[in-house]
Every structure is written in C-alpha cells, then in structure tokens.
Amino acid sequence: MSMSNNHSSLISDIESSIPFNIETANQSQPLHEAVQSQLNTGNQLNAIDIALNAEQPITTWTKEQISEIYNTPLNDLLFFSQVQHRKYHNSGKIQLCTLLSIKTGGCSEDCSYCAQSSKHDTGLKAEKLIDVETVFQKAKEAKLNGSTRFCMGSAWRDMTGRKSALKKISTMVSRINNELGLETCVTLGMINKEQAKTLADAGLTAYNHNIDTSREHYPNVITTRSYDDRLNTIKTVQNTEKIKVCTGGILGLGETKEDHVSFLYTLSNMDQHPESLPINRLVPIKGTPIEKELSSGKLPKERKLTFEAILKVIATARLIMPKSIIRLAAGRYTMKESEQLLCFMTGCNAIFTGERMLTTMCSGWEDDIAMLSKWGFTPMKSFEKH
Ligand code: SF4
Image (cartoon, rainbow, N blue to C red; front, side, top):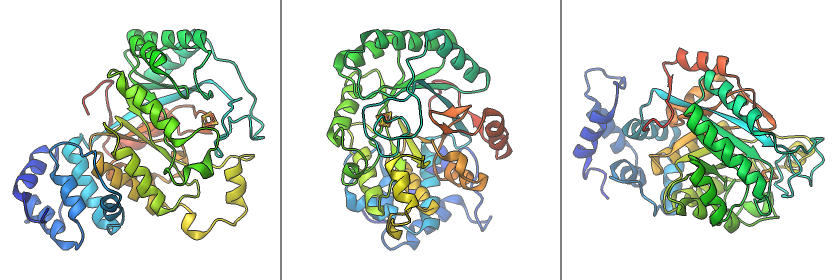
C-alpha cells in the first residue's frame, strides 16, 4: 500500500475519533497535516500505514511487517501507536484490575521464572484452594477500592481431576459477577471443552493463559508443557464464544528482539486477537533458574531487557492489535512513574493494582489512583465498551 493512498479518509477518521486535541509543535498546523507529514517522513512505514488504515483488526500479520513496525525509530513509533490508541480507545481511561492468588504454590510445571513451581526452591509454601467467602470478601474490597476486573489465579498445571475445585471456582465467579457486578477472570492452567463450558455457564468474563514468550524461546523457559498445549487451551476458550481470552507474556526472560517480534506474531495471528493482553516485566525471584541466570552476569547484552524494548513491544502490540486492552502487569512497581506514563501514552490501558500480584509486589490502589488522576486518567467502568 502506498504511503499516500487512503490517507485523507484515515486522517478524517482519526480526527473524528480523537476525544481531545493532540498538541502539535506548530499550533497553526491542522492535526491531519501533522499526521500526514509524520507518515511521509519515514522510509519504511508501510506496515504502520496498513495498521492505521485497516478497517478491522488484521490477523494475518507477517513477521517482516511486525519487525518493520518494532524497528521504527522510537519517537515515530510512539507517535503512531498513540494515534492508533486514540482511534480505538478513550485515551483518558485506564482499567483497574486486582489479581488474587486463590491457590498458591506446589505447581508441577517448571516455568523457570515462577516462585510457585515445586521444581524450584524458592521457600514458598504450597497452600490449599481458599474458600469462596474469603475470595468474595477480597473481591468486595477490590471493588470498594476502584477495581472493576477481579482475577483469580491458581498454581495448577491443569484442571484434570479437580471437579470440586472447579465447582467452587464457578461459585466464586458467579457471585462476584452477580452480586458485585465485576468482570471476572481466572487462570487455572490448561482446561478442556467441558471445563471451559462450566466456567462460561458461571458467567466468566475472561480466561487467562499466557503464551509467555516466542515459540522459539519457549523451550528455554518451560519444558513440562509445549507451546502448542498453550495455544490449544486458548483455542478451547475462544471456542466457547462466551469467554474472552486474556493472553500475553513476560519480558525479560533472556529473549532477543526477534523473540519480541515472534511473540507478537503469535498473538496477532490468533483467529481473534486477545481481548486482554498482559505485558509483564520479569521480577527475578531468588531460587528460580532465570534469577540464577540473570545474576550470573553471563547473559549476553542482546538478551538483556531495556525499557526501550518494553515500549517497542507495547507500541507494536497497540498498532497491530488495536482493540486489545493492554495490561501493564507484574513488575510495574519496578518502573518509575515517568516510565509508567510513557507506557500509558504508548497504548497500555489497564493495570493490576492492590495488595499483591500473586507472589510479587504490586502498587496499591491509593497510590495508583492518585498517580493516574494527576495525569488526567479516570478508571474504566466494568464492562465499559473500550
Ligand atoms: S507460571 Fe503457572 S504454570 Fe508455571 S509454574 Fe507458575 S503456577 Fe505453575
């Protein structure tokens, strides 16, 4: 597609969908000329042009196109991701979500970053599934503090042989939905068709199952289940046509830039883009293999995560999966406020907030709400059309 084709319709669409003005360096220059001139400044912006002009989200992105976007000079990339973000979302809204661990530790998987794997000596004690009332009270507290999505995580490989646990979790979901009006999400490992149907019937909003990283890097991170096992669970959830998919990954697992492109390729080529796309920044946990590797100082420079690379992943995700809610997840507390602001400007529009984020720390509601309102963001409502 040529750079100039369709731009007048694109620009008028952008102008009519932008809820408030973007300040341009030259205030006398209309916005459409500013966008047009930016599109004309780059030499290799065809993939961005396609992303901005698409009438519907595209699910046939090539790695070459994604790489072209990812490798766009950062200043331009952030500009275009903001344009895309404002075209599809209210840029002043951020969703607050809270994640509760409902069954901690003792997991039989060997995810090399995870404190909850029974294969790593992290000092974490395995616990039983907590009771419905305790979970409900935690959800109520989250709602009172401003969260509109409540996520529940359990450290299980899958739901095989966990009939009574699934029943309990379904009760948690329906009570939180019906009595509190919150969106609900669970992450329980691999599930089959019947288990997905049970959760759909309980009214579950979304099921989280992260792909974690690229297909190529995945075997360096997990050996106890395959990349395709993960994709199959995601497909099973999508096939319910009732439960939305929440899937994303962790940055900082020793992956390269090519892995970032490949990770985004897998996500953006799903039949439907994930409704929710969590981006985690690794929090290295003592006793995990990845922490040992990182602290050994032997990781090559090209495998060390930079903040610039986090922004590139977010911006590229926003451009190629324009409708997804991009959630800044674990590790956000390690970012400066100015870095978080850049992530929101680039296209993140949800955060996890509350007491904890599974086994890692989390910024609290009070601090987050104060920080967001300082910058003019207001919380999204539950089930608000994004
Ligand atoms: S990330 Fe999930 S599946 Fe992997 S070890 Fe931790 S709890 Fe288990």
